[in-house]
Length: 188
View 1 (cartoon, one colour):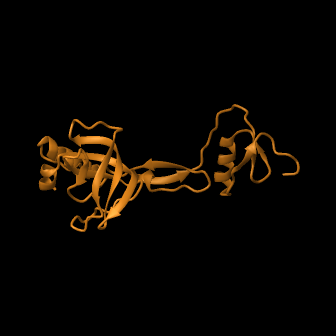
View 2 (cartoon, one colour; view 1 turned 60 degrees about the vertical axis):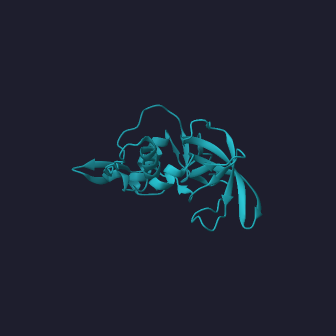
View 3 (tube, helix red, strand yellow; view 1 turned 90 degrees about the vertical axis):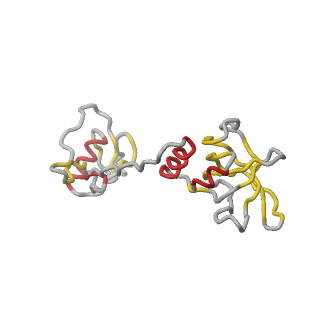
């Protein structure tokens, strides 16, 4: 990757907006620039014509409309650009690696973010997840604000607030949802 970055005149993130006719299997496209990593003379929001899509000598060169990738490009004398290597999948790690290389600083992998216990816990029936001693558990809410804002529940009953509907759903372990705001009609 370092060699390909050094050879590239321009490195940017962008989205393929249009693709143009193929010649010997190669085709060109219009790429909308999102972020410029190398090549300060190019501006974000600008559109560039990029040649070399579909090149069999480059592994990932088959661009599709709406593809958002990291592009490593060579500038041609015509003012257009050409892919000089595979388009790179856009993710945080790849962006940080390329940015570090371009700036000439060592890349340091981020330490993993610890998962919180409630991130993996799903609480049925509108239950709330609580964490104790790094363990997740579900509980029903115990109090709701006292303002009156009635909702009609899927069970045909009127609840003073949506919060009270959720508390009843949890307490009775019954699937309830808001059918509509306001009082339930007798026919519901």
